[in-house]
Image 1 (tube, one colour):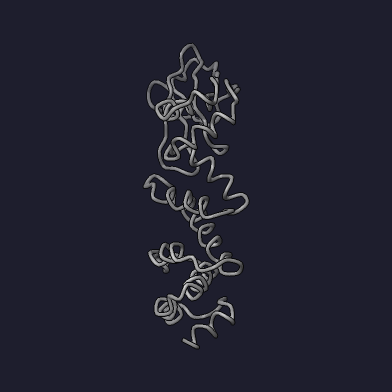
Image 2 (cartoon, rainbow, N blue to C red):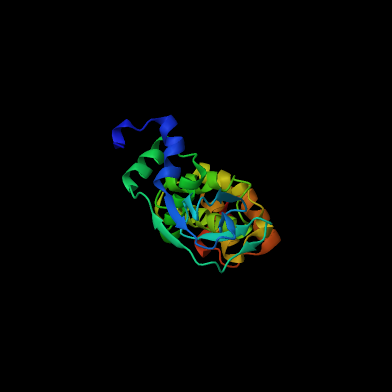
Length: 220
């Protein structure tokens, strides 16, 4: 497949082929491969045909279980796994055309989590991913922490980020860590959301907020 011929309809289905692995299990009692994800609550089942199944694996943290005819699942079954196709440039093209693909988006999020969001576009990817109701709470917290970190860093080097601050306003501050709340409050002050920042300090204290931001708040 050439990168140039990929269109929107192809971008929706091609990733499952590009990320396909040949999984071989010689235990005759096993009938299905079950794919579970650390990041998501959903799981997928694939029928073993003569001990072989072709399984799309989008995450480095995918967990493979094997299921017998009675629905019992096993994590200690021996198997072999090898990629069928590796074309990263085609994956990138699919994501360009169809960024809503949930599994490709997870792969991009993995990269952003490892190094932090580089720009507003990457922060936006994390924000849209956070809207997925199938995310596990722990993974939601990792994504949200990177979003807060990105907007907080912008207060040190960039101009006001009204859109980013507006996103932070919607967060439930009670579920944030002390460091995250300080980052949010810092960002709100930088973007002149003084009343909202004052309420946060009233409810959670000023620990961790930069002195210059507190001075700015008091001067208003």
